[in-house]
Image (cartoon, rainbow, N blue to C red; front, top):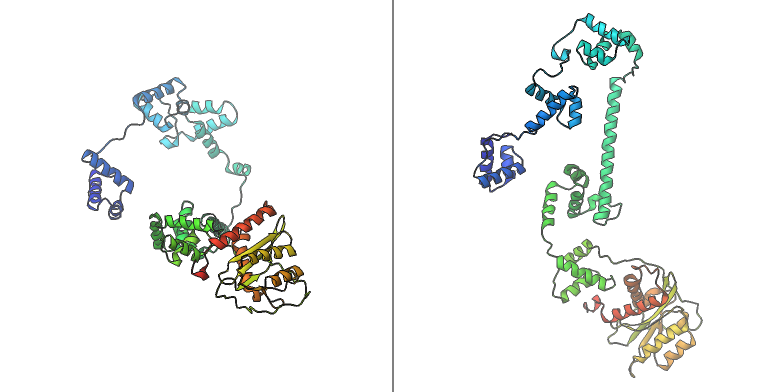
Length: 497
């Protein structure tokens, strides 16, 4: 309870310090910030503070009288009256009886009130109790004490040896051993608390910021650590959380203040997520930054990477084994005219082709494209569930139809059987195209075509779950992806065009 002068001093300092409750509490050491603001509101509304106010009585005069009347009319038992009415406590009811009806309350004689009986009278009462000559309550009432006092006399007057023989005694542990056990219990409790804290931190790191279950909390950024501490501060103290994640106190409050600020990249985050989702979830930070630049949003690569990390926009990099169509040297191989020079000065000078396989729950699908070395355009492609001659021949027919009369490109392939069968050879000869083949078992000799397959599977195939997709639906999606690849996908090697 603070005096009027103490309260006025605190309110005046609160006004002087620009209504900074924390500064006043630090200087005076009282009151709480909540009480200080309440005093200030009272001061503003009434023009001052109350000098003193007596607390409003908890019970009215009618309630007091009703309790006392019940006591007098129901056996004069304090506990019975309190149980029947639900109020007040036994001590307060006794005070009310002494106040309204002095001398009407039962008085028991006992040592607590400074009144003692002769030892002979106590022995006589105990003998009467033990010989069952009367009920304990009757004996106690006749003597003028309570039943509890009567049984206490019995314990005191009975032979100590007989009493001790009737009771079971548990030998206490030696002092040193008991102290060691208590220390061990405390140590185990601290260890359990620490392990629970570590478990909660790892769980929150997985749920809140989507980290791996075994992440080291010390590898998190200070911003992520701040989010973890805010999520766990109701169950643990700030000091033990700071020590566990190794975050300075000042850094925590700095990032906590930063988190309260409005996010200036809120609109950009939405744009980045849309670009990532609309482009088969395969754009990295460079291509997303290029798209943003086209829209007039200029950001550094570092900011784009950070936004993608915070939004968990990650391009899958899963790799699987590739399909091989090599069946041996069934006919003479053509010379390697490309010789790993995959540059072309104009369209339709160098073409690359190969076959790749997609393994689906419902079966296998094969793709045969024709790639132009000039800009990576997929000139033509064929998709089928069988890697037969019709697959590559139909693709070559469509590619030949796109040529002008004076265009005779080099068609480079590996040494697969599809490019040695009569149907392929006759089409090449009729269109006056030039054959070129990689060396045996040398994938880098056709690296540009293999690179297209890698981008296709990394961006389109591996990140998705194809269970429940039929082969026909999958082939339609592959066809749609290649159209998007030719017409919309940004290519960094072409200057982000």
